[in-house]
Amino acid sequence: GALYYQTRMPQYEGDQAGPIPASFPKGTRAFYVMKYEVTQGQYAAFLNALWGEHTFFRAPFAGIGYYDERGTIRLDGRTYVAGAPNRPANWISWDDGIAFADWAGLRPMTELEFTKAARGPVRPAGIDYPWGTTTRARVRRQLVENGDLATQGEADESRLTRDTRDVLGASYYWVMDLAGSVWERVVSAGHPKGRAFRGTHGDGTLRAYGMATNDDWPSGDHDGGGYGYKGGGYYEMARERARANDELLLELNPHSPIDWRNYAAWGGAPRSMAYGFRAARTADR
Image (tube, rainbow, N blue to C red):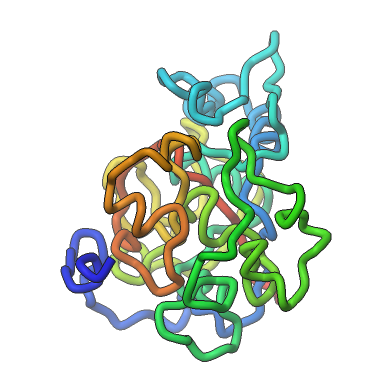
């Protein structure tokens, strides 16, 4: 994996410009973050709350392959239902995610808050993962044959303690799946649109095309800029990934170290089997 740390890609890692404004959420102020990524059941409930014309833009299941790669949301009459409501929602674009956050009265998380949620106040220990070690050898909360994350045996979350965080993949604050599951979309400090983010919260309403209304939030699925990717995600089912001979998948996915940010400023790739969303909210607002 050293190749990926040595090669700098500004279009993905950011412009290294600034300054980062004081209003940009850096993780120094208290904030809430969803313990789990948005689930397919939650996203179906979101779709059911939208106006009809908005659903044409926010429903993720029109593409070929959606149901083959872990997606289960479908339209049953006039109601959206999820076949696996507790499964992380994949095939979610940035605009999908921030629309959900606006509707829910939340906001997107920044890349600095991602680091805080993962590591807490602990000093970094080399190339560390959110569960506090430099290895992923003990992680058992992984994708299984039916497309869900494992929840039985060693992966049973009732066994989560300070000593089993690296088995369950839990962060310092016991936030789940910050590495693994699906890629985390975060507001980037490496792009001017990201640095303009002030951490405003959603108000429950959307504008035309089912878009979030907050003017400080970066938007645009197609190279819109201002957001990026952290944490890693599953691209294929476990049995297929095990057969693959793809260095990028093997070294960086589905679990990427906390500080790995090779795509942290890349505002591209609208929907994928490995992309999801997790929202946050500032504590004192």
